[in-house]
Length: 192
Image 1: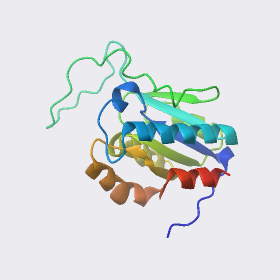
Image 2: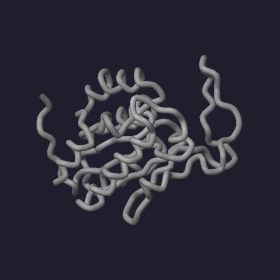
Image 3: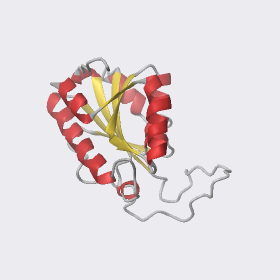
């Protein structure tokens, strides 16, 4: 049985990964994008109400695409430019007044952004992570947070992937080794 979770809202940030139109329009598993959006919006509202810090992260290249990564890979690269609204947040999650928005150019939310600075200046030592996709944006951000010494909580039912297998592997074999896996309800109760 997992230890009871307690969170100090003044030292905790909710970091919501890539709940943007272009990503949430893809099929996800084991949870639908709609279910993840609903739970993330509930978490964000609870963090705001308790005085916690809410960070909304989205991904996308500059308009000219010049800062996009172009690695040589075995998987076929995506071609063309995404639709104009691809990187816009879904309205249910925000942003709302007081939220901090991070635009990243790669999978993780720390490299090349002000996320670490914003967290440290607010004396935040714990990050609650949710979003899509578990083994891409969430896991990449989590690995960077781990290396920077943050405590982490992963909201399993407010996180999903492009396949249930990828989600489960990331939760069971990576994220559980660098933080605590909890449900939306457990996180909401920990804020009270």
